[in-house]
Length: 582
Image (spheres, rainbow, N blue to C red):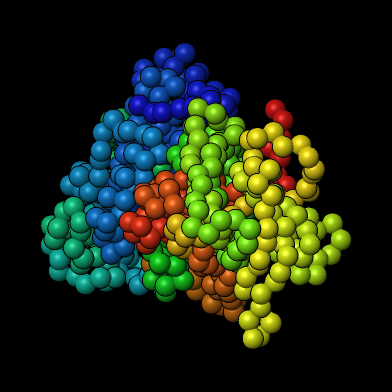
């Protein structure tokens, strides 16, 4: 079902222990899990952990995992998101046993809601969203009963049927579960289970104008599908009593159990779909797959591999507590994955022309260069060398400080894979800017010949000028400058809507006089233009390379064209981060 490398399955954790005991005791005979995203945005790095947990745990115990779209809110959902989610799950290396949609069960959910009304466990409320919110109470004070709470079963059945028939407008009425307005758990204070939404649905079209709330639909879906272990992030813990209430009061034939784990938070990263959509809509980024986005498609376009992401979430592990992982940990795993996979080549991002005055004019020689010194099986390539080359601007200083070992007037350095050169003359423009260097080379110092005559302290990279391929380089920094951005939880996004509070988090930000957009890094993208070796002309989207001294780069899938490559820097070569020893 899955592709796993370097390790098998999940490390020891409390969920695995529960599953082991359930199988051993005969409580369950086959493990069934599900990954249930709402198709209202693209998957992000936090979802990668949920995908890994659900698919890997089921696979470890010979079970199966469903991919289910919790598509209960047509106002925010779209087939674009459905397709992107399927693509991302497969790209990560997973395959689902069955593909399901919550909307496939709308008739069954409606019937279960009718059952609740008949049992006196649900009622139609005419209050507005603001009124319901105001009477819900707080953590320290009980809620107030709705004036419509004691409607008769007959009246509630009639109103609910008329809601389905489309007689009422959006927001005019809702169906609420009748539980306990004084419960210490606010989620049990008569939560909304159906609302009116006259909107076209991507799967059911215009068949329905009432839709179940996520918190009501989810346990019913799990029970219908025979899910044994409903695994979700920790913020759903307070919802578990309502989950169990729905299963019991709706008299579902199966009894799934919900278990919660700590979600994955990464520094300098927001994963709220509301915030990510805002970044897209307000054009802070060029789409959901912008390489600065923490979406799976954004990480893929940046240059991350599925192996690196799976290894990262494996290392993050499964626990029952919140925690934030430093972004450097994620970067560590892509370095580890690419160091043996990515060919090494040379690129000049800020070019300075060098003329080797004693090299024969018109002559081009081909030098051999290894593709990856840590992986000899990757072989070697031929690179041209001639009288004119490009080096990096930063590899030359006219008046260098002490211990500067690169090129400066009178100093000698080695060109990677080539010769020693010595700077003899500096050419400047009318403004005093250095635009060209005149150097000489020593033909006795060719790499690979065993030359031992003298030593130089500096080695710099270069690209031969006449055959160099012009290229664009996109250098990324974290999109969010704040190391620990405040995040609303999935519950706030997917469940808070039960009282019409979909924008509650945004309103809270506004009241505080700030927005997460205030923390968007204006320098998150720098675009520079330079040159790469001629063999890079045929580089294809998603090809990955290590550029000497610059880092790992990926050919961009959106802007790169044949013969005109655009490279995204995945990650720099080194970090101070060290993975703790186990």
